[in-house]
Length: 497
Image (cartoon, rainbow, N blue to C red; front, side, top):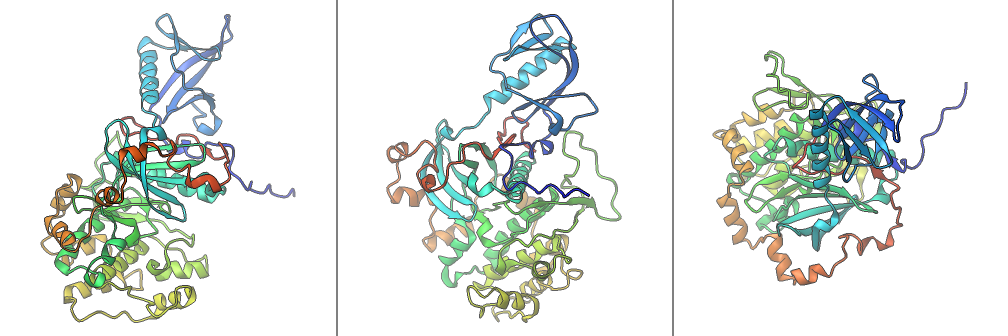
């Protein structure tokens, strides 16, 4: 028996791994031949996915992996009413004039909405982590401020990292497509020679971990925490509704925008699962324009499936995640996100972590032991309802751990109108109580801090055209080593999901 072929240590120069997950914006049969005349001509399928033009062998072979990649034409040459000639002399004969016109319109739309790093002026770096850096940028055309996350391509030299990048791109685009109320909004996605970049709405106050550190006792009173937690819960529900397990629920991935609403951010560890209707509910209403595995607001659902990768942030890991790290046969699912949610609420209400406070910073084994066996303690100032909810979310038995619907109906959240919460989050209605509390404690938005530290249009304009260029000088330039076909995203087109 021949030895199995080892997986390559690097992704291919041009990866098609994302393309099968992007819905085609146009599929049209054509006859293809190379000019000049005469024939032979061959019937093929012409397909546009994101801004990638594919030529498929036939209707039975529709995978992008079987396709020939065609250059996106700047201005195809028209011949008659049903023919076009692409660069390189490829002659396309459409079955009808409307089909050719639809193709031309789709090509113009795809070319018109191709984002580029020169569309944004970098102002300053907001932070950095294991997967890259985040920058405050200003859109050249509109002057609107956004956050730009730049991921160095040298970090993407494994198939696992590329898979995580694909999941993040798909999750953010799907959230934008479905107008998710409490998930950070994706504006653009594009590649530079050395980076993958996501442009998202700006969370003006930064992440909750940093915000809490600036508040008295590093916590919020229950009346403020309750409204904030409602946003967080809806964000996780939206994530699960889109069929994604988040896997890294923590305060650093929860950001606060200028209106005082929390948004879920950083889907770098998200994993696609399956969603099903809850038992006893009717079949969902058919939405032909939507992706099949998305559950709509009127549909009661559950996230189905398990993950086995040992990923996440230690302090927020559930017992089943810890056990999976020790033995890959365990696995974990949606309840693991609920556990992380419980840790977030505990920290918001107390300013401390629920488990392993005595564990050293590098004492992973001590912390993992505490997560599995340590008795949780609750301060006397917490209400009985708050303690009850926290116990439900931090129950070590996944079968008895409360789910999202149970949390929404819990006594601590009694009186919350979830429709109003979602509507206010979607419309960014100011949360006056929280904003006044932040102002009272001198917690200021990022924009104010940037200008206070001397950022200006003139200084920004002198920055490198690639916002990560100066910082990336120490990183080996890999050129197009990790080019990911279809990575580009623009909300004006159907490149979203």
